[in-house]
Length: 395
Ligand SMILES: CC(C)(COP(=O)(O)OP(=O)(O)OC[C@H]1O[C@@H](n2cnc3c(N)ncnc32)[C@H](O)[C@@H]1OP(=O)(O)O)[C@@H](O)C(=O)NCCC(=O)NCCS
Image 1 (cartoon, rainbow, N blue to C red):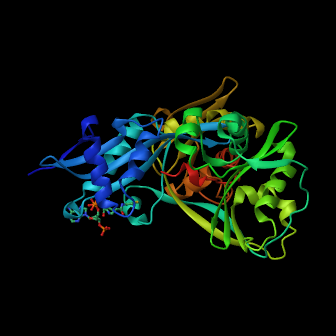
Image 2 (image 1 turned 180 degrees about the vertical axis):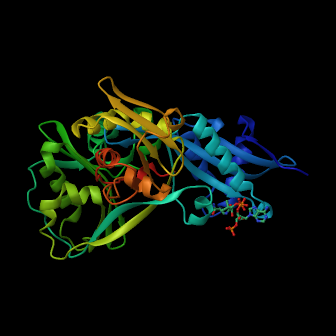
Image 3 (image 1 turned 180 degrees about the horizontal axis):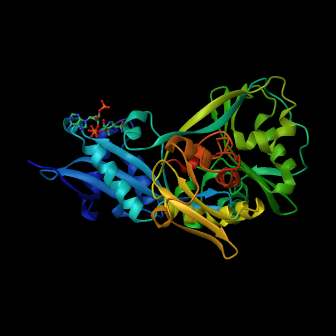
C-alpha cells in the first residue's frame, strides 16, 4: 500500500496529537496541543503528513514566524514536530515531507528556515546548516555588579506591564540578528506562561528593563532581557536581584552574547574570565530573492553608508539574487535577470552565507568575489552583529 503525502485535515488534529505523543512519548500530548492552540500563527497548511491505511506514519510542521535582522524583519519557517513512527522509518518519509515543506515555504516567500535538533545529519541532507549563537558562562558568583540604578524590582504583572515590556523587547531585539518578531497575541498566548518568572525594573511608573532567568541547580541561566538604551543601570539592578548573595545564591551563570555585550563594563567586576558555550541552531536559506527583498530596509542603509552603487549577483549557496543600487534606490530581483557576463558576483557556500547573515563571519575573509566592488558590497551588507535566539520562542 502506497503512502499518501498531503496536508493535515482539521478533523485529523486529535490523531496527529496522538501520533506526536507516540513518537515523543517522553514529551507527551499536551506539549504538542499547546504548540498548536497557543500559536497565533498556527496554520493547517503548515502541517505535512504521510498517511497509510488511514494512519499518520510521519509528519513535519512549519511554524510561520518572522525574525528580526537589524531593522528588517525576515519571514521565517520554523521546523518542528519532525517524527516518523518506528515501523515506517528509513523509507525517506521524513525527507520527502521536509522537501515538501521547503517547496511550500519557497512559494510563500519565506526567507529562512530555522530548527533545533540533536540529529544534525538528518537536516544537513536537506540543506540546513549549523549557525552559531554564542553564550558565556561566568563563575565566581555571588557578586554584586557595579552601576545599578535605583529602581523598584518586582515580578511582572502581565496585563499591566506587557505593552511596555513588548516595546522594550522590540527595541532590544532589533539590534541583533535572529530574535523572533513578536505580536501581542503571541505575547499573550505563546509567551505568557513561559514569562511568568520575568522581573521588571520600574522607576517613576516607567518600566526600564526586564529579565527572565531560569535556575538549573547551581547555575543561573539568563534566558532573556530587554532594556531601554539609556537605562543599562536598571538591567544591572535586575541582575543584582537574581545574583544576590544568599545561602542558595547561584555559583555560575550562563548568558547570551547579547547580554555580555550590553553589560560589558559591569561584568568586568567578575573575578574570572567567562568560558564560551555555543548554542547550535540550524538554518537554511529558503527563497533568496524573498530574503533579499525582506532585508531591503537595512541593506539600503548599509549600501548607502558605504557609498556603493552598481550591481551584484549574490550566491547564497541555496540560490542567487541580484542587487542593483542606483539613484532610484535598491532593486532586487532573480539572478537570472542579471546579465550574467557583466555583473560582479559574490559566491558563498551555504554554511558561509548563513553565518554571514547571522553576523558570525568576517565578510572580508570568506566567499569569493569577482571584483573589489563586489567585496565592498558584501562587507557593507554583512557587518558583525550578535546572533540571538531567546529560548521562550522555541518550537
Ligand atoms: C528522525 C526521523 C524523523 C527520521 O524519519 P525517517 O522517515 O526515517 O527519515 P528518512 O527516511 O528521510 O531518513 C532516515 C534515514 O533513512 C535513510 N533512507 C531514506 N530513504 C531510504 C530508503 N528508501 N531506504 C533505506 N534508507 C533510506 C536516510 O538516508 C537516512 O539515513 P541515516 O539516518 O542513516 O543518515 C525519525 O527517526 C524519528 O521520528 N525519530 C524520533 C523523533 C526525532 O528524533 N525527531 C527529530 C527531532 S529534531
